[in-house]
Amino acid sequence: MAATEERVILVDGADVPVGEAEKLSAHRHEGRLHRAISVLLFDPQGRTLLQRRAAGKYHSPLTWANSCCSHPRPGETVEQAAHRRLREELGIDCPLREAFSFTYSIGVGPDLTEREFDHILVGPFSGPVHPDPTEVAEVRWASLPELFASVRPDDPAYAPWFRILLVEIGQRRDFPPSSS
Image 1: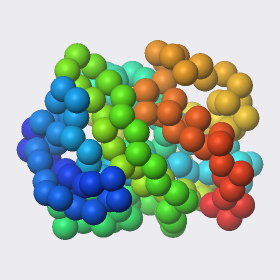
Image 2: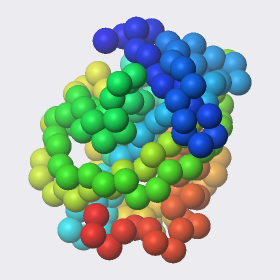
Image 3: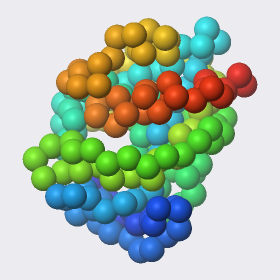
């Protein structure tokens, strides 16, 4: 389904649905607050799976980001959306649980803003991945301490929302969860 055909769930500051909008229009200009998901998969060594977004993405192409991210569709739960996107982007699935949520807003291109109520889901994974090349250019594993030490707040190699997510994670004493 093309980006212009997707619909997102518009929410208020408490994540209560207030409507829906076409995905690209929800990201135009200042952006409209909408529900999102960010998945972080961890291997037995505690490293997280990163993906480099495909060159054809309409924003933030070829930047490194968390394992998977997207938006629930109207009528779809956060967890259903996360499992759907893991299968679509990486060709995998695994148990997930929500770790926390937060809101953020950041520009991601000319006249495009991510303004999201983001649900962070975590899960264990250690098998092979089968990325869809229209979604993912490459994958790699990295430890959180490595990322905290190397990713700068303005680092263009990483997606803007992922840099914000790293700051949010770094401020939490309960992350990463001991039983991802």
